[in-house]
Image (cartoon, rainbow, N blue to C red; front, top):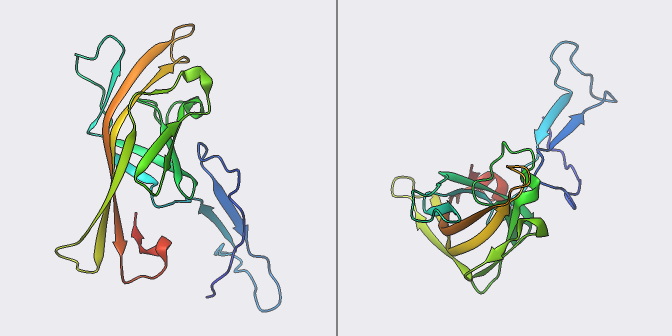
Length: 202
């Protein structure tokens, strides 16, 4: 058994796609690969994260098509977010999900500032992304009542209010959606483990 330091960069990686790091340990002095147990190969799932990325609860986020705001809104139970840099994540607009092959066109970026505000933006002008209200976030922490070493950290995004156009679902038709509400992320941290990536209970 051994601990190996693996150095590689995630600069420029697009988390719209699913990434795997393939590793092969070659035979050399002091190591001979087992002829039947293929211990020399590994496929590692790359899952970079920051303080704000993860799976948010979307039950308090309402998605409505323009003109149908008074009808039952679309609600997604979970909204997955992905890391961009230390203080920025992205998620997919409205009801766009992982199954859409064109999901990369509908990325909404959220930049978290130290003052508690959030800047939402898009890099695709075709979705006509518009923010109607300034969003903010709060962080609260609470120790677990049963497991005293477990820290619950809650990140709440408030005052979400934006519009976007889905221009690829129906050919030659722009569907305007309005999204409003809040998101909350719970992260469980084992305070007995010093390594941050190992301390998180995913």
